[in-house]
Every structure is written in structure tokens, then in C-alpha cells.
Image (cartoon, rainbow, N blue to C red; front, side, top):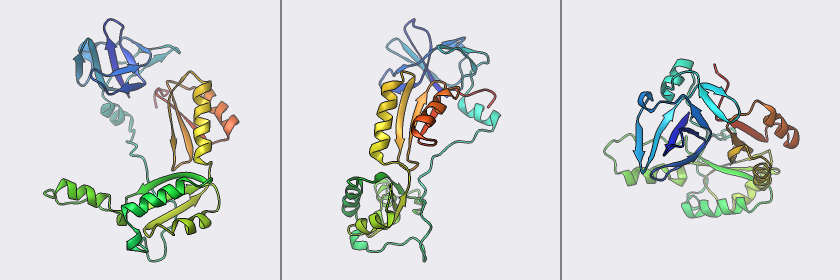
Length: 259
């Protein structure tokens, strides 16, 4: 799914990354066969730039440009036609639910201040792999007339979240250390590479491959996620051989069609 943008008479391009300025800015390959007059959705224009914020493009990729073989459609129509579900992501907790359920151990040590202190302590560990908050146990407020500030405060209530910390080794020992400052719900899991290792891998990939359009570190999965316009599998195999299977996930903006 792409933003299509054209500046002046440079021709339309499929944006692999978009700067949220006005007008937006982006980089990406040229599109052959694009027609603004028949494009689905809403076209916008400002300061000599035209853009369309969301379309599904189907065509032939030759390594430098995308030649459309079917008219572009909206992402929603594409998902519906090909039964592709939305991916909402996940912030789940890998630890099994404790006996008696997830409960606060010490309310006096379950505040924003103690959470910040605990997070800093976790991030200072040599074995630190990642950290995330699981708010799935906190039901969304159902009162439509509730004060938005009160809703936000309740959704961010430290007593209604599970603090997740991933380390590379000795999860029980790390849990004992973190319990010195944190009295809320806590899951310390073990596995994968340290965050420092993952950041180093991310830097190495960017430095060694001009095809990379973006990347990030997924703390929960312990994985570097790399974006390219298209990978036929060779880059994924190369990175698997270099860093080990599952450490780097190559994500293509384009995918084989039909999906």
C-alpha cells in the first residue's frame, strides 16, 4: 500500500517513506501507467506537488520502476478482494499468568515514578533485550461522556499494565533486581540478542545495502526489521546466513501477486 506523489513534471512515484510536511516529501521508484484522473480515493495538491495518501498498486517490477498492469484500488478493497486481514501488531505478555492472576504486589511501588526508575534499571543491564507495556488487561473506558484527560490517565494507570522486560539470560535474577523498585505486574522473559547487538546489526545492514529504505528494532520479538522495495528472497537468505535465522526480517513494499 503506497502514497503516490508527483512533484512538478517529475512523474508519479511510489513512496517508500513519507515526510509528514505540507506538501509531503518522499522517495521511491517511478510508476508507469498512473492516471490522476482515475485514481481511487482522494488526490491532494499543494505548492506544485500532487499526492494520494493510500492506494494498492499491482504491476510489473523491473528493479527500477513499477509498470501498472491493473488499475490501482484502495487498500480496503484490495484486502477485501484477497482476504487479507489487518495486522494490528501485538504487545502480549509471554509469561504464564501467575497463580491468582495478574495482580499488583505493592501499590506504593506502582507509580509512574517507580516505573520510570525500573525501566532505567532494566535498560542499564548488559543483558537488556527490550521492553514493552501490555495494557490488554485494562479495559477501555465505555462512558462516552467521560473526560478525555481522565480516560487517558486511566489507560496509562501503572496499576493496570504489565511491564515486560526481555533479557538475554538469567530472567529470575533480573526479576529480583527489578522487584526492588517495581511493585506492579511484571514479566521478565529470556531469549534472543541484546538490544545493543540488534542496534549494531541494524547499523551494519544500513551501511552495507543501498536498497534498504527503512529499518527498526522490534523489542518484543528481538528482531531487526528491514524494509526494501522488493526482495526475491536473496537478501533474506543472505542475512539469515550472516546473523542467524529469525534475527533479521526483510519486509518488501512489493509482494508477489496474486498474494
